Length: 426
Image (cartoon, rainbow, N blue to C red; front, side, top):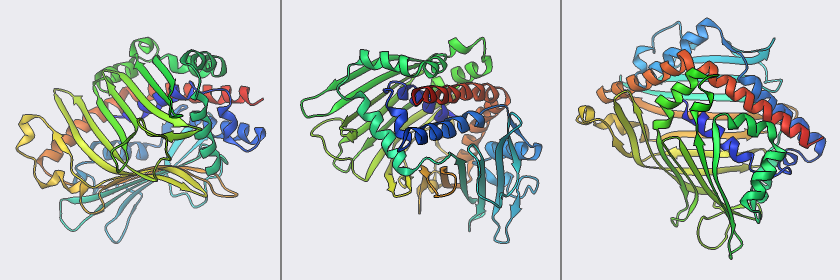
């Protein structure tokens, strides 16, 4: 499944509630900002345009997706891996670029830096640990994002937060439609901004509350398989994602159920503020709290009270966020598999835990990289095999029919963002 893409698209709708000044934050000058929005949004539009994969890469991707939780089934399959190290490490390397109207993935090890916006480098690495049934996964994705710098990213976030401060919901709605007409239309085919509240408080903070409705019916004629997938899987997800600090104060809250997504945040002078209480700077590190369930086939599975460390990455050349989960949550599993819960479900949270990060990292003289990193350990068992089959079912449904249509939708959104930003910066 790809719920993250759905929530990212919903976040795009949030972007369109911002004012016309936000695109200018993408660079120190108007010309630089225009070049950076074109490179970033144009590159992302290309990423989802007529996607093609070499047969060997496509097969490897499908098998890894199917057996991610039971990697013993693919560890010795030499047709999958680009390289097999003497230490037992298996690696799939993939390069991607937009050429001749297609975004093409191939099995290759790029020897040079990514040279143009939209180029991609993908690494999937599998290592067998001491126990026969324990494996470590590492996934790394680098996407060339033009020459956007870490200070540019900081400036964009600051302008976005400032854009809502002291302004009414009516004013925000009106300006978003005026400033981002193409993006509003593209996102409006799937999402509806049902609720928008912007309130200034006596302590100098400004709270924004949004309610976004996922409406697959509106794309059912043009993207029927994607609409069916959203109905079957994504609308059944229940999610609560909250950021809290060491004192227990909340800084961000997202809730999703039955295709309705709500977000709540507070800011002051372009900086995040706690949702309640006096305005103060956001700490460098927080806790992320997650409750999530999904229904796949006849079964509902999920986690409750999943708590992890959240770190804001803010260096001279990098802006982003990192999460690490080292404490096992409470599990929601069907009674039929409840008796199988033993140590294997604890393993992903042992030692260094499960880690995820996403960031923009600028490189003077080279392409800025939008980078994503994930690492986790799995210990195979009966319950893990059960979860793996459920995940493989959802992944199979996505790849078989829905993915191509989802790509078309994403490409239209990013193309619209590029064109709207270009118009604003002329």
